[in-house]
Amino acid sequence: MEPRGTRRRAEKPEVAEPPNKLPHAAPSLPTKPALYSGPFPFYRRPLELGCFSLDAQRQYHGDARALRYYSPPPTNGPGPNFDLRDGYPDRYHPRDEDIREGLDHLLRWLLEHRGQLEGGPGWLAGAIVTWRGHLTKLLTTPYERQEGWQMAASRFQGTLYLSEVETPAARAQRLTQPPLLRELKYMGYKFEQYMCTDKPGGSPDPSGEVNTNVAFCSVLRSRLGSHPLLFSGEVDCTDPQAPSTQPPTCYVELKTSKEMHSPGQWRGFYRHKLLKWWAQSFLPGVPNVVAGFRNPEGFVCSLKTFPTMEMFEHVRNDRDGWNPSVCMNFCAAFLSFAQSTVVQDDPRLVHLFSWEPGGPVTVSVHRDAPYAFLPTWYVEAMTPDLPSPLKD
Image (cartoon, rainbow, N blue to C red; front, side, top):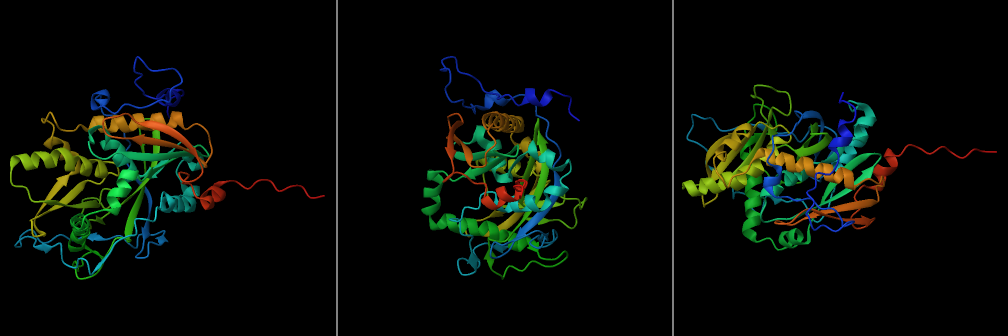
């Protein structure tokens, strides 16, 4: 039980007001790392509430049928020699990214399980519901130099829902993706095929199709500062040999990266790539990232395990590195900012938070299309039935 009065205090927007700010101007949130360098905020150990699967046709199933099992090559063998280009493009079935799913799959899970949430439906009324990937974007914002983002936020029955909106720049980039980038994306999924099996104790079979519609998603509950969180993220596999079989501590994240040969290359890797890996795995409590390092020909020649809780050690003494406290404090500040900005309870009203590198987070307000993202089927199912009119 939190002491009375703490929530209200914590939810004031943590916004630095520039001295020349005009009264009544739309508020904004600064993103400079120095503003968020305090102690690490409270973050509750994530608890898995449930899971769901998406099949080869991207259909939802409220079970773990898409979960795969970690099966790395033996450590005493000759080492991996995985051809990540094998099967491209003939055995590749990429997901149609023109279909914008929003929060739909997570909302479907929520609808099925709202009665079983610990703390009851009242807990949900104070919570923030989103995808893990959206929170990852927030965590890395103070250090991001290239890609902006937009997050749509709506409040419905007290709950704040956050759903990312594809920026015009991101859409243009996706539609004009060079073939090499498409192939690199495939190689990341292909690596998973070499490292995972469909059954515990089985052997990986890399001869099949790579279908990126298929996904296993964990649904987790946590709390950052004063903000209860319910979020979902895709999980690559579970390790049957993990010290604890309790999710999320048995999960493993799989990544690929190009081989590095100089201290400068490693420094750049630790500063940029490892930050994203840390944010993505720390949020859901996934303890390890296993990376396959590929040569210019597309073969994975070595594997390295990066424990999530040790990643920061690689940049601790680098003045151009990143700091986990800054990431989490900024995320907490953004959630406070969103909670205090989106006050009207209306699923058709959208506050659009926009950010471009170098600037603050700004807000604009919209109604209905194109930004409204809570589907009618969800709103209607979550709305208690109105009393029927009295009959004569």
